[in-house]
Length: 393
Ligand code: RFL
Ligand code: PHB
Image 1: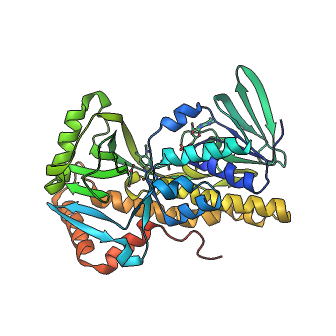
Image 2: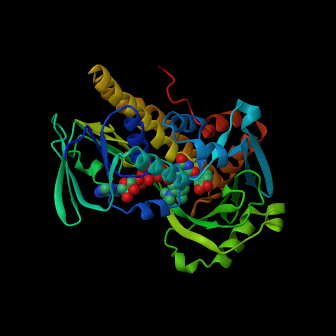
Image 3: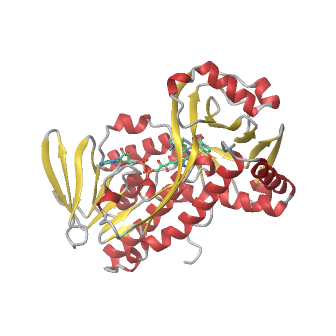
């Protein structure tokens, strides 16, 4: 089999790249180790920056996003029994869109099927070869039969645990990492949210996030110890803990219901530099992970893909490698700023085990400054809503 771009991974990064390339007449094959249903069953991101929405508009997959997505003009931050609103619209004249990653994935899968582009699901033993050459290859096994795709470029969109990043020779990559001493326990439930906007709460029992997917579906999280097992968290225990952390009128009026999904995710900051080697390009979680507190992971995947798409289009239209050669550099400026913001949100809003009173006082001072300074609020708003995709060109 031969294609122009072999894409490993059918998460949002791989599917979005496939869609952009398909519309530009560039041939691509997507290889995914899981089934379609499994990919659609993963509950993850929920907040889209306007820049991500623009890329999805450009890719022609935003019809449902515009009809079903919820526009949010701000967020609330809970601390010491009070909630403070950060009004994006007033501060920076912009907003975010609440629309689930699952729905974006579904929209992209449907567009790909309608366009007749090739996606191979449930492929195993995916391996990349000759990535430093002009004719890289991807080998894999499907239905017990070994096969190889020859291509011009490989896009490693296979997430943090994929095969692409580890295929780059040791020594060519620098890895930067921070882990956090807690995870997020998340619950999805079919009940209407009793909060109009997302609430990020730093309570003395730990962090909680009140989010949503639609007017009839909530997504809620609590910070939990890393060693907690999901079986220890009945729905009743989760809602009780969530209520205590969110507090106030929301705790009193909120409606709870049985969880339709429940999981614990560890928190990590990770960046691999550079994001390319030869003709292998990493995009999305394959190259970097941010803790979910800043809602940046999916948005970074979309901006990487946008830059990679531009580089590939330039190569096929103008036979110029200039955009591809600059790919990593273009991505990393934005990646590090999102890594900083996500680390900052995580640090300010969670309770860290084993810290002293000095740490707590500094955290309280930082939040007090945020609630009282328009400049600090503008900075949060600007980063949350998303830094421009391309400040220099
Ligand atoms: P994905 O989604 O992990 O997709 C990678 C795909 O590659 C496949 N794969 C392979 N395929 C073939 N061969 C192999 N060897 C393979 N190895 C892996 C996998 O099966 C998978 O289908 O990465 P991608 O596309 O880069 O997308 C990244 C986003 O999924 C991620 O950054 C976000 O979900 C992060 N995130 C959030 N991001 C936001 O922008 N806003 C949010 O509100 C937000 N909330 C979250 C989040 C992530 C969370 N978790 C669970 C980590 C909330 C949570 C709880
Ligand atoms: C979500 O709705 O899943 C969500 C929203 C905001 C975040 C993280 C997750 O910061």
